[in-house]
Structure formats: C-alpha cells, structure tokens
Image (cartoon, rainbow, N blue to C red; front, side):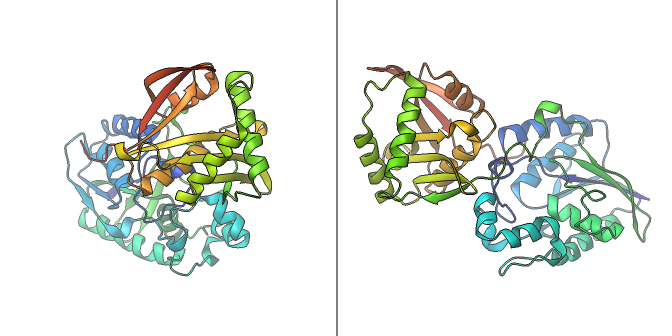
Length: 376
C-alpha cells in the first residue's frame, strides 16, 4: 500500500490580489512563507520517502516543507501544474468577471463545461494530472510520498478518483492553501483517508477568499474622470491632514494626466460592478533611475474602507511596476495618517526617511517588489 500526501501550494500574491494564475509563475506572499513554515512543522513528524512537485515556484517552495525533515530532493513534474488559463492569466478576477460574467460563472460553478480559446479544459487537466499521480504511486510502491500541486488540478484529480463532479463543492471542496489530503494506492486504485486538512495553519494565517468581492479597474479618462479624480484626492488629503492647506486640485490632476500620458494604466479607476470604489495613481517617472516604482495615490471610497479592499488597490501598483522591472515600491504618507501607516506596515513597507512639509511630517516608505524565490 502506497501512502500519498497530496498538498495544495501555499498562499501566493496572486491569491491575495485576486488574480488568475494558471501557468503564471507569480510570487509567494509574506503570509504564504509563514504557511510553509507551519506545514514544515507538520511534516517534521511525518517521514516521507519522496517528494514530488509541480515545477512552478509556489509549488516547489511548498514542497520544501515536506522535504526538509530528511533533506530529500524535490522531483518536479510539469503534469502537476495548475490549469493553463490562457488569456485569463495575470488578469484580475474582477475584470474577467465583468467582461464575461457567464463564462466566469461557468468556470466556478460548471467547470466541466467551461472552455476558453487558448486555455486547457478541466478534462484535459484531469487526464494529465491523474496519469502523473498514478505513475508516482507505481514508482513508489509501498512507500510514503508527498505530492504538491494546485487547487484546480487537485480537484480535477480527486474528481477523477471519486467520480464527484467539479460542480459539487460540498463534497469536493475548494482546497485551501497548504491543505493536506491523504490517499492510499493499492496497486490498482486510489482511496481517500481525508481531504483538505489545514489544521497545521494557525487561524491568523489561514487564507480567506470571501472577505471582499473582486474589484475591477478601468483606464483613467482625463476629461471624463477629472471631477472624480479631484474629489478623491481632496477627500484623501482631508483624511490625512485634517484640512485643505497646501492642496491644489489643478496641480494633482495635471500630474495624473502626465502619468497617464507616459504610461497608460498608471492611473486607474476601481469599481465594484458599477459602483465607484477608488482610484490608483502611479508616477512611473519618479524613482525610475533607482529602480523604484512611485505610488502617488491609493484611494478607497469610504464605503470600502476597513473591509480588506486596500490590497486590491496595492495589487495594481505591484503588478504595474513588476511588468516594468522595478525592484521596489515607494510612497509618502503623512505621519498623522495612522490608518495608512498601519496598512502599509502590514504589507511590508518600512520607513526609509522623512521630511517636514507645510501640512506636517511626511514619512518615506519603501517595500521590495520581489520575494526570496530560492529553496533553503
């Protein structure tokens, strides 16, 4: 009898940012690295003979937790990759859902009938991944093996094993980050011991996908969006400083037009369906010589504050500047703006300087854009 621990990869920035991943080899989040350590503590008590993984970074880093106890090599297999989502990859779920709501609903609730030109079908994923799992089981007869893969891929494999359709999320759940499922292989077929167990992850490190809905974005339109931009900046200024001393709507709007002209996509409006949700203004010229990406403004409408939406605005800045090859993010925040300071501290920003202004002290914050991507 072969024992297989089937594990979903740790939390990624794509998970947090609400982006479609697929074959896209994105970064593991700060929380994801802590989840890996929790998984390593679990597998410190579980001797395994071999460790297999998808060849994508998020899976390989997770596999290291199972390999660490006995310093085992990690054997990669492309057949264990996530579903190739084709043109959806690196897109925000909010944009995808707005542009084609029917196809998005089918992706979530009727996966067996979902198809997208340039992407794999769930049936194709089931075939390649289940074949790989069976080969691993045969190669390790009578041994204990850890296999790290991806959410949709694991569901496809287990759907093939159990006959449970992918649409039945009650009996075939969405697998949580670093969740472990245990299978037995008797030489002919698999049986399930348990599914989707993430009891090793402390509650404060568990990933949650239901806190907020997915925001979409639209490109800044200088003429049509002027009044909205100026209102947002004025409200942000008041929130940070308490009054409008030093505020100039004209100068900030002009700067936004310049940013947009240099790099379309640097200024975005955010929406929850048709309801305005906020604004992102990035200055791609400032800090460019140092490899830094400058954030001029992240603004959330009052209705969305304190509800976990801020990360979806920051995600736009991260994604924009990563594509430009920048190494870090920079911004200024008023010392008096405690809410903003706390948010950026949670997201890994550290103070690197300060300056006095007419409105009070401004703090210069910086955050690296690239996580450590090597194994221990």
